[in-house]
Length: 282
Image (cartoon, rainbow, N blue to C red; front, top):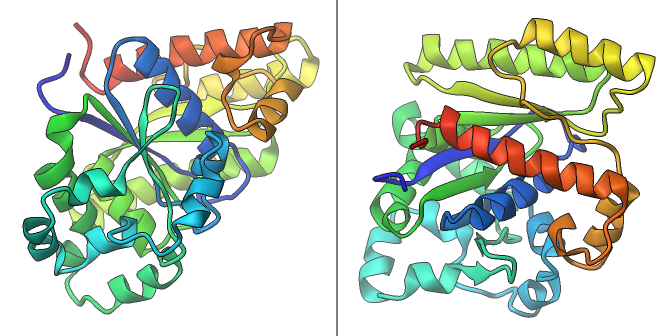
């Protein structure tokens, strides 16, 4: 196991590309490989990661939860954590499928503006990293961050804290451009902010390599991202939506369809490869 927690953020400056689904399934796959995994939802107050694990009602019933994910970004967090020894435990929920989850909270809506009032970029974008380093990473082997589908102060905090990006992409011309833009944005961050954030994995969702179009898109991404493309792409499967409606991942299905099983196998393979790329291989 790694000496300190390996980190990665699922991110693309576009919504609806499968970031939350990838975060959940990679997290469960890593747990099945023996890693202690924490999932952290920064993607918005709708709490999609909590919904994915059937925890949304529990989160809603406790909507005045304090501390919550927004609290860790505040200057008072250190004082709060000293006065409340169980503060980090109070943030965290078991998913029932292995990983732990720090769910999103409705107060995330105002967090971006709060962070925007911090003048220095190094202070504005390092709040989450300080929390993970000081209070979380000793308890986990892997931390996966589900980021908003748009560039924001919250997203920058996630990128700085993770240092590595998994970019789920649906095959298509517009989505290919979004992946290309992400690569340019990371280079801009390196140049202007002096922070090295690697594009560790491009993960194609809902791709059918048996079709001419699917093969063409795969060839395109293999050419554009020879080092970053995931070893196995995620096929389209109706069981993904069926499992989500039941508050679970594909790993929980007793009788998965052939496409669902292919997706499970793909997530297993890609999870192991992600660990290697993050430097956690044996």
